[in-house]
Length: 361
Ligand SMILES: *Cc1c(COP(=O)(O)O)cnc(C)c1O
Image (cartoon, rainbow, N blue to C red; front, top):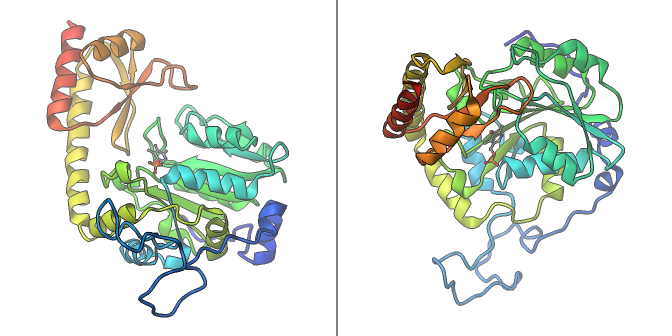
């Protein structure tokens, strides 16, 4: 990591208030039934639940913990981040939406994204009627600092960086990210959905140095828990308070909290999956290199490969005929000719390679 330097926002409530939308700054949040009560009780007649039980599994008749205290404590332990710096969302996608809603005044304020990148930043902005400033990554898929600097202004509230980036698969350079954090007065959101596959710690351990930094991670990729919808945001405690104020009170359901809590005790299984997928990534890369139809395989710090083909449309169609679905990214900027291929199991990768070899003859 680069040496410490001062960030623009100093973490005071007053400074944060200048960044927030006025309606959010003035909001009186919904108080759920369980908000007001912190003592011990064994009869709960406050939330209109079914006192007799649940048609589903036992326990599901009760609302979940709105602040997911146990889960955050456990995540905090694993990631070495205090619970007051953790926010949990119904997938990272909820976090993206909440950040835009909290900070960007519709039609007047903007977010910045660096294409080619994850589509949800732009979709959430569009849903919120917030404008998107697009500054393409360089040919090396790195932030274009002069162009970014030239586009900064007071109406720009959030910059979304994705590292490792989807779909280019690479980590963004630390020194470039740091320059962006330093020169921007708004919040820099670093989406680290694929950080477990990168030989790099990411930005979590830099949180207390940079108050305008938000790091997002997810249980959907390395942890293999896309089905339970659980995303994480790590940031200054004042930012976490705002996100808590505007989220739906019970955004993380009881089942998700229970499943995640159990899984967190078994992070060695996650690490084994990561090892295996990294080996498969290596194997797949080697096999693809031997095909004449493949022009280029971009270096990957994630669980997918961006691959440039002579005729991506034909490859895509042929694979689909064989029941293999990949992602066509050939119409995205700087991804001309490219398909994005998720690293599968050994058997799945074998089948993929067999089909491609057959086509290559
Ligand atoms: C897959 C992915 C996510 C995960 O989103 P969830 O809503 O947590 O499933 C987030 N960001 C990027 C860049 C991704 O590719």
